[in-house]
Image 1: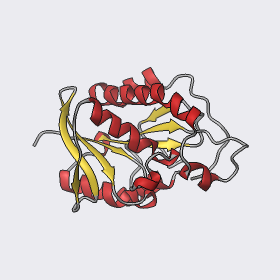
Image 2: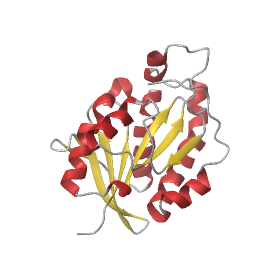
Image 3: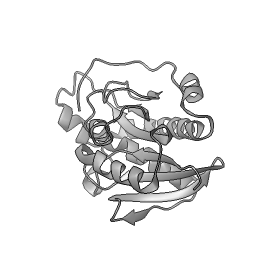
Length: 200
């Protein structure tokens, strides 16, 4: 069986959350698929929208879990078991309030950083040794309520500024597919300012 790389965009399912800040991981992976004219299919067994394709000459599985963010680990664990995917071939794409808007950071391993979706995956897999791409949605002192902030839609001004962010994130994912996490970290982890620590 050919090696398969798994890329998971985190978010909450349903129209109500589609444009929310917490669904930025969903949006980036969806836009990646759209750019290659690929379409997701719903898998009840894997509790996800999935598609498998050849990208950058690598076998890639894109996944959008259909469970709520806090239970993301349930779907990811099922896919990894069913498809026999090595943890080093897993990339989680997620929003991060600890990174300023417009920035991103990719890592080969680490803690959840207080992100409930990532925490669910770590707990379900019993491991932290997998790649994660964090997309900045930096909370500000004007928005002190974290839950309201992450579940709210982007403002019109933020939406206009999202295009280059999503493009950069897609480029980062393609680099990870082709070159692996270390070279991608060296290329993309620059000028990414971290805001004060919060949990979501």
